[in-house]
Image (tube, rainbow, N blue to C red; front, top):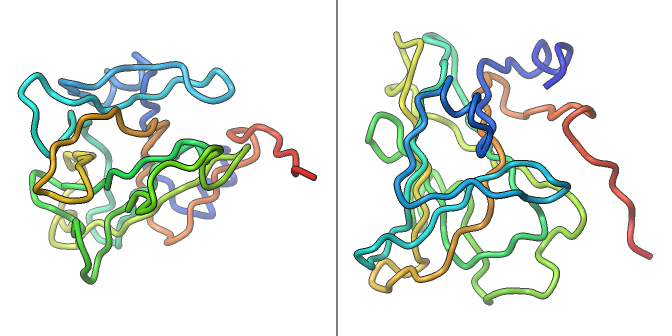
Length: 191
């Protein structure tokens, strides 16, 4: 993000998935994930089904800076044309930060219930999914381990497809992330 965006939204840290230097700086681990070239040639990472099939795909795990006093938020950058029926939840230091099903803290990306659409839910643009990180997980701490976990909508069914692309994760202290114009490709309205 641009310097002015960081000042407005309290950006503390950002990892760019699929970028080896950024992932290394954040202690990234991702068995059963793969770096890919995503929309507009940008690096991204997808979660794949593990060798032993189950309801979960591979997990993206990394370390991020956090504010030890204020409320922290995590925003995932996603491509609007990627459509998936799978849900994405966050874990902070191994503890689930939002619910897979209904609850006070919904999944950070709940997936599409109707299956895949031909062009995805937001054609031609990125979307951003934000979740609060529990205060109990960040208070008094300047670093936290985040896990992005993707699973089948129905935890009783096997996850057999690759996840949507994850482009970045940003930790910030304002409830709304300003992605900055430098990060976004121009959006052309369809007619």
